[in-house]
Image 1 (cartoon, rainbow, N blue to C red):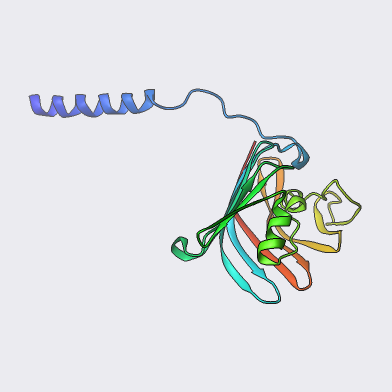
Image 2: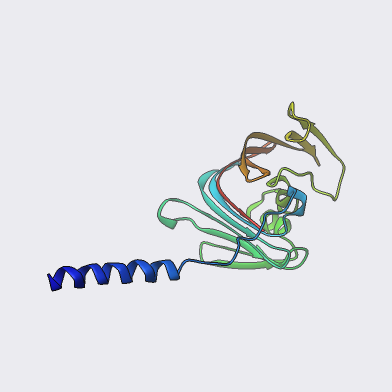
Length: 193
């Protein structure tokens, strides 16, 4: 009988201890609009096609006003490429045991890989927004607020699916094209602030 009481006492103590470790602070509320998102992290799958290459893999992108880091990697972490820096300032590209720095992510990708890819604009497009630095033509879905396509600086951004985080609608499947470049993104996880 004493063992039974001892076991019940231990189980009750463990349960109560688990309850006391539960967080009690309220969850931070999400921004009202995609334009108000100051920082995010997302991940998913990416397919990149250029005249010379076809690359597919996974990506993880962390972005804040102070720092960004975009990692693209193949199965089991093979072929990892990292692009990071401070928005509007120096950027760093790391791949194949190379570590290069340059004035912008766009310039680094062009200089090192020969890719004309507007990373500066993609930070807006990935949230379903036109970049503020140039004119854009936006086509909306039937609801009148969700973008279906953005044409900007010769690039076509087509939104195929959206996901909802509470009241926010964010892209889940999108394609960014400017022949001969085509990038397909499938975003499997969004975390925004």
